[in-house]
Every structure is written in structure tokens, then in C-alpha cells.
Image 1 (cartoon, rainbow, N blue to C red):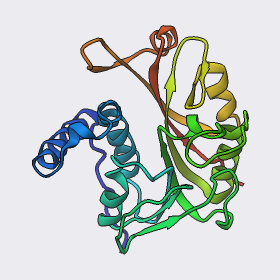
Image 2 (spheres, helix red, strand yellow; image 1 turned 180 degrees about the vertical axis):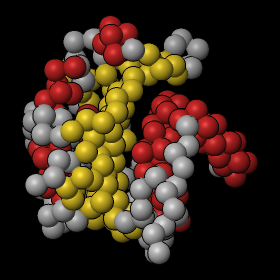
Image 3 (cartoon, helix red, strand yellow; image 1 turned 90 degrees about the horizontal axis):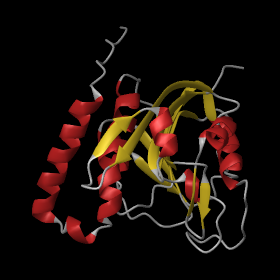
Amino acid sequence: MKSLARPRLGLETLRRLYWLTQQVLSVFFNLEAMETGLLTSRTIEYPFVIQGLNSLPRGNVLDVGCADVNNFLAPSLASLGWQVYGVDLRRFKLVHPGFHLVREDIRETSFPDAFFDCAYAVSTVEHIGFAGRYGVTVDDPDGDFKAAREIRRILRPGGSFLLTVPYGRGGKVIKPTERVYDRARLERLFADWTVRNRLWYHQDNGGRWDQVSENAAGRASVALALVESIRPGQ
């Protein structure tokens, strides 16, 4: 019997659900001691990923750069019936029957072609190729492009790739941590993809994240770009 399509939840609704989850977790964990800056951006990024996956049938999903102390996505998706594969050079101490850690470099993995139904990378791709962090010892200026090509290889035709990266005026490199994307580099990153949805957010001085236009994000020192893309069919 054909399953009924799952309704798409609004991004604002998902943001509120994530905020509520944070309040519950704060009863048991000291979240103030856990990279609070990243937690702030996750209130935008995680709902974006959940919204993109919500209407899809359960299958194999790739979590690129899963080893983040604040990563609630992997166990949540595994609990909802996804087979979540986390790829990272670091250890991630998550034990769940629906989660599988693969300690490899996303630029070159052992996964077969078209293995995944979808993939996501939350604030990860901007770090790829920088020596000095995450076990990387050699600089690779095109590391992000190599990662995107590898994700395209192991994603099935028509599969979704959801990405979040820092975005801002002119693009820049902050060594040894990350690159900030501008329009030119982001378009190059997705040159072989079909982009379905793009959103931009900017954090004001009070810590609030607001959705802005592409032009406004491009004028900011640092904003946040969220991209939903599709691997074209063969």
C-alpha cells in the first residue's frame, strides 16, 4: 500500500520545537558549558535539515561531520527510523541501532556509488581542508569542492543534500578554522547540482537570528547560508 505523504512543517514551527527541546535538555545538562555560539546557530540549521527530510521516505542518510557535542540530529533521525551514517575523522560516542559511525575523510570515502538517499552537512564543509584542526595535517584549499564531489558520488540521483555554511561580504578565510562563503564560491560548490531552496540568516547584536535577503547577507561580515540541493539524475 502506498504510504501517505508526510506534511511539511513550517521552519518557524520547527525552530520553536527545537527551542523547547533545548529547555528540556537544560534540566539535565549544563548547556551553557557547550559551545553556546554554535547552539545559537543550530536553532536555525537543525530545523532547516528536519524540514528538508520531513516529507521523504525513511532511508539511508549521511551526517557529514557528525562528531559535534551539540549534535542532536543524528540520534533524533535514527529514532525516527532513518539509517544514519555519520562520517568524521573524530570519534562520536553515540550508541543507537540506527546510527553507524564511519571514521573516514569525506573527500574520499569507502561508500559505494548512490548509497545514500539524502545527506546533510551542518556547519562542516567550511572547515574541510584546513590543517590544524579535526585531525587534518595538510592544507587543501579545494577540500570543500572535493567533499561536494564525493557526496554527489555516494548520493543517489534525485537525492537531497542540505548544507549550512557561514556566508558574508567578499568571502574570506579564517585560518586555521574555516572559510566564509560568498556568492561566487557557493555557486562553484554547487555547480553540478540542482539548487531547490536557499535561505540566508543574520545574527543581530542581541543574538537573534533573522531571515534576510541574499544581498543583505552578502553585505554582512558573517551571515548564514542554508542550501537545499538535488543531485541530478543520470
